[in-house]
Every structure is written in C-alpha cells, then in structure tokens.
Length: 591
Image: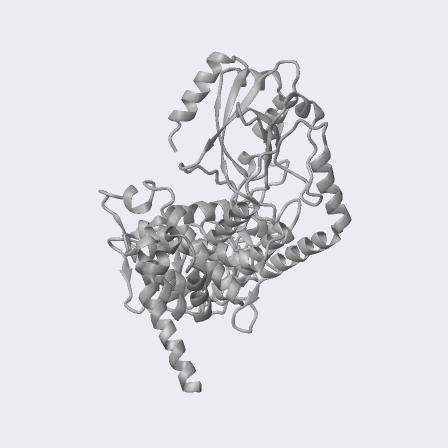
C-alpha cells in the first residue's frame, strides 16, 4: 500500500485539530463465526468508530467470545449520536503518529504495548483529550505477520498475486536467479532440476538450484533455494526454506522447515510442525503434529536473549522436554540403526536432535489456532455444535423481546449502520472459500459454511447462491492472474468444486438460486461473464450442478418478464430449445 493518502489525511487533520495524535490503518476482514479469529489467526477486534470523522472511540482486541458481548462506556454513547460498531475490521498495525506519541510513552513509563496500553490508555483519558483516527484501505493490501497462520495466509496471498506487483516473478525480474510464473500459479527458478515423473501442483514456488527426485508430489508449497529432495517425497501445504535435505520416502504436511534441516529417509512431519535451523530427523521418525523443535532451548521468563546458548550437539534431545511422544514410521522404535549415519549419541533416543518448545499459557490444545495447518475437522465440528446449542437456547420470546426493545427504545439516539444480512453472509462465505483455496479440506469448508448459515438464520438455498458466487469469483481472479482464458478457468473451477455445489443444490429451488445468482453476477458484479453465459450454462448442466427441470422452469418464469430480464434466456435459447426437444423425445418414447 502507499502511505501517501493516509499521511496527507493525518497532516490535514493535525492542522485542524492538534489533539489528533495518531492515524491507525485498518481494513475489512470478517472473522470466522466459529473461531472468532481472522484468517491471519488473530483474535477478532471490536471497534467503535464515528462515521463522519472516522475517530476511534473504542478498541477491544480480546473480546469475550464466550458471551458474544462487549461493554462500552455510556459516556461514549452519550457524546456520539451516531457510531459504527465493527467486528469486521482488521488492524494492519500501521500507524502514523505525531511527535507527542513519543513523549506520551516517556511520561507513561509503564506503557509496554502499543495497543493494549497506549491506544486503550488514550481512549479512556479525559484529561489530555488526545484523539486517534482510522484510515480504512479497500483496494490496497497490508497485513502484519506475527504468528504462523498469518505467515501462511500472507504467503498464499503473495503466491496468488493479491499483492501485485510484490509477487515472486516481478521481484526477481532481472536477477541471475529469475523466477518465472507458469500455469496454475506455479513459480519456478530457471535452474531447477526436476525429474520428469515429479508432480508440482498449483500455487507452489520452487527456488533456484533445487533438485526434485522421481515420483515426488509437491502442492501448495514453497521450496527454497539449494534444496535436495529425494524420490517419492510428498510435500503439501508446507514451507521448505533454503539448503534443506529431504531423503527418499519422506512426507511433510502443512509445516515449516527451516534452513539446513535434514530429514532422513522415511521421516514424516505431521501438520503444524516447526523445525528450526539445522534440525536433524532420523530415519522413519514421525514428528508429532504441532511440534516446535529448535537447537535453542526455550527461554524461561527470566532468561534474556544474551543468556541463550545452542544445545550441545552431543547431548541429544534434552529435558526441555524430550521427544517422548515421537514414534517410528516403520513399526519399530525410533532409535537409529547402526547403518544410520546419524548416531544415537547425536540424535538421542528419539532420532531427532533439538529441544521441544512446549506451548505456553493455553498449552498444546490451542496450538491449532495459530498454526500453518488447517483447523482440524473435529475442532470445527465441536465449535459448530456450540453455535447450534447457543442458537437453540434463544427462545422465540427472547427474540421477540429483543426486537421490541430495538423498535421501541425511544430514548436511544444511537443508530447502528449495518449491511443487508445476506450481503454480509455472502462476503463471509467468499472469505471462507478463499481459505479453502489455500488447502482447507472440503468437509471442513462445508462445516464452516453451515455454521455461517445458522448464525445468519438463512436457508439452504442462500448457501447455493453464495457458494456459486465464490467459485465464479475464484475463476475470474485465476484468469486475471495467469492470463488464461476465462472460459477455461471457469470450467476448471466448476469441475473442481462441483461436489461442493451439489451439496447445496438438492432441490430445483436451490438450482434456480444458482441460475438467478449467475444472472445477477453478469449484470452487476462480474460483468466479464456476461458474454459467456450461454457457454457456461451447458457446462453447469453437464456437471449436474443444475438440472433440466431447473433450466426450463427458469426460462418459463422469464416469459412474461421485461425485455431487460430476458437477455440471458435469449442468449441461451439454442440450448433451452435442445433441452425441450430432448424432453419431448423422452415423452414420446414413454408413450
């Protein structure tokens, strides 16, 4: 993003109001209804903003998700006749500050955190009167990486070219190790050694001087420079940094592998693992999910950075704690054999050299929240059940009372600006679908979409239209990023997600919803599909996304419509006539 507009806005505001000491950059990003987290793995933030001035009135980055409520000081409500309450904004952690901010930190020496202490301190300070304002970005891209899920999400955004021109092929242009973009979002350096039988899947990056052996399968992954990958290796959804050696038969899933790591033959790295620099994993060893392994011992709260020392390479895995949970991938203990070059003195009893960094505070049960790995299916089911229970507990009387209070509260001068529920639902489905493009399993995607539907009290048919919109939008974006033909990318997207669409098209009414949504898209949001309607409609029919009955009923309902509403029926007239004739032939045969 360019800071020019935000900076000018801040300067102009300062001229009018010397108390405006900070401008905070924010952007739209609806958190998951199940996890109450953004796609970057951060807790949802609740902000109250004055709609006219964009002044920040309230900020809470640790909202009580269990009670789904926030507490706002009545003085804020009394002094602001209108405010917007958001939980769909993401803090980019980019701030434009006046010089007073530095002196405020000096005066308040107990301020340790820019948000938790400084921002909240200013918002409740009635004496100095300093103000914080917001600047929302829409078409630009900005994000902070402060956990492994955000590292994964932003990396995938870069690969999928949401950050153009900050993308691999443009950044490397003119370098001696230039990276080129190929079909399906695959980036490869010019000097990669790739076996003919190796398969590189979509949205992957292969760095310079890397060699990949026979029958390897790599998908949704980044492989750094100077890596040596043996035969029959499977790497999915992972980040392999520079100069890594992965021997034959290894499997790495949704993990991060640091520089100079060595995985011996048959090793398995389960989802969510972090292997830091120079870690060595023995033959057939399984590294359990969400393990974090380093040559450095995890510091205690009292330790300073200067006191940290590397693990003694002769000590093996130490009591920090040891890899007692390690298991073998060959039905035998994970102790290296005599034939293994990594001796037992070097690998300890587990076959891995390094310290485990145990999770702090919440423990390992919460590691999935900020992991590279997709959220486990059982966690999504557990959270969806909780949402369903909460929904069931709300009686009709409670709902009626709430509605009555909203309609008849004459003393309230506060107006809350809200979008149409379906529009918000559609946006959230698209954001959820975007995460699926990053590698989330289809079953988990269905669970999240169903939970969204419950939270908005919408019908099954509403899901059909929203999911179809997301699939078609992904095809449009793919065509723009790869310069492929739009019809081809659309066919590819529909073929890939046909089962997902079928999950929401069980009836003719739900199939009709897809046709009506397609019309709406062609006329309003994605007009590039307008000329392709008659070509895509037969494809939807062939893939059993919409049936003959739905298409003929859609055409019949348009017969008495205005001419403007008949555009796509007329465009598809030849195909509709073919369906009618085929139906008549079937009737004749039955007679």
